[in-house]
Image 1 (spheres, rainbow, N blue to C red):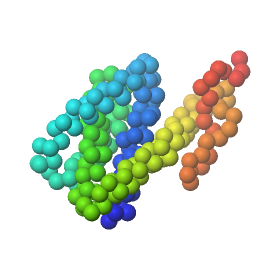
Image 2 (cartoon, rainbow, N blue to C red):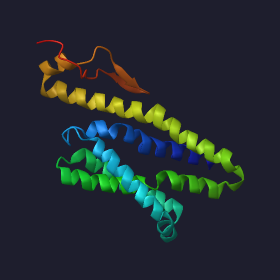
Image 3 (cartoon, rainbow, N blue to C red):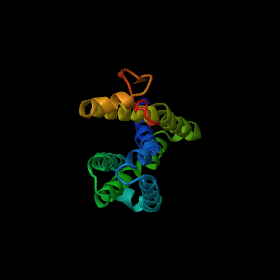
Image 4 (cartoon, helix red, strand yellow):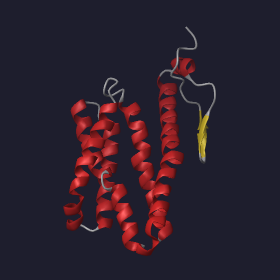
Length: 190
């Protein structure tokens, strides 16, 4: 059970912290260079909602809250990637923030309830699993996916432009195939 909880917390760290590391950059295009607003908005909303965690947990059990959070975060992230208008993006960001608000604290609560004798060591191990997954999997994984899909799209839609902006080297992640990303610096040819 503890290994499952370690794995689950690693995924939670990946979803919450890995996504937050990229959300401002990814949303810059849709919000005309103001993608940081989404990160600030979701973080502020999470800060406020965590004050009301007690009454929410009393209406459901912790595992139910994790399930509801996962559903909301999934819908919110999918909507953030699908919408283009500012109003729709803000609604999607609200759903996403509501979903990810209770991931981290609820997971720590589940661990402390199920393994009370583990104390700070168990909580530290769970927190470390989440942070390591965010740093080792979250940022690089999202970066790889962004490189992959942006490159594939540009290569299909504008092959000449892709040749101008393709990066020198390739990018790989875990077991996935290598991809040649885009170089965001100045054009290589005129």
